[in-house]
Image (cartoon, rainbow, N blue to C red):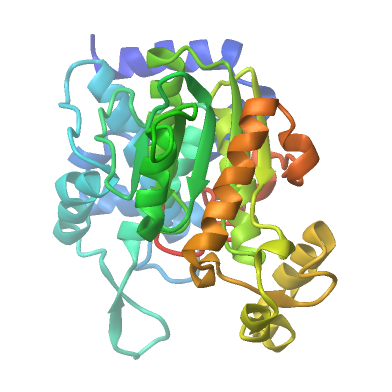
Length: 363
């Protein structure tokens, strides 16, 4: 099938199946009037995405977001029409294979921030990552779909043997041994085997998609229960809310998420060395205020605490308590719930899942 015929078919399907908000987004994001972007001349690119097309004052610049949305969309359609090969890598592979050569060829990577100033390179690679996330968030495609992206190595996870629906997550890869012990049923292997994940801060949405699919297909999990062991600070809250929202998005019947990092875990000496959140940069004050509103801070105080400071005995106290809740079904009596937040509230317009990102870009 010609890829344009495939595009017309997909548009008809999306008009019938997408939620109105997602269909509206797709129509706004893609330059339908554009021809084949990867085969276009510089003159055509400027006509479709340059100053005249977008009303930008600088005639030498293009609307990178709209250009890349259109490029990604066309690549996805072509793969399904069998006229382009899948990426068989990750999102960054798409940057190297397609976007960077295109931008280099058309001399679009360097721009002047002000007239006469030295040209600076655009951060298009990170923008590509964000824009792929927008397509996923609006349910246009999945990372594991036509592009056939690989599972990133930004997190480790194992599925539970007999209680896979319980997921223990920590944002600290250094606590992977603790996770493995929970997955193995404890030191003596007499406890239930639960699912576990450890990452470097915020796990990528791609990884969560892989995890969700494995839980659903390999273990038949429909109702997911998550315990999140994250830092007791605004960025830890962001991780908790994002994981909860993304797992809801990824097709489980229900998702119940608990905040495992409670104030009673920390000793007075550890609290005394915590971060004074009254001294944050003005740009972060709203984050701190919201964290205080949602969690109550540390017994009402603006003190941020990292779980890294906890001693092995304190961590064991936490995991014993969590496993007791798993066995008795009384997690709700032991830990506060993470209140659901709409996924769209967690993303800035035109930027995927950037809210509260603490470390690294989404892959």
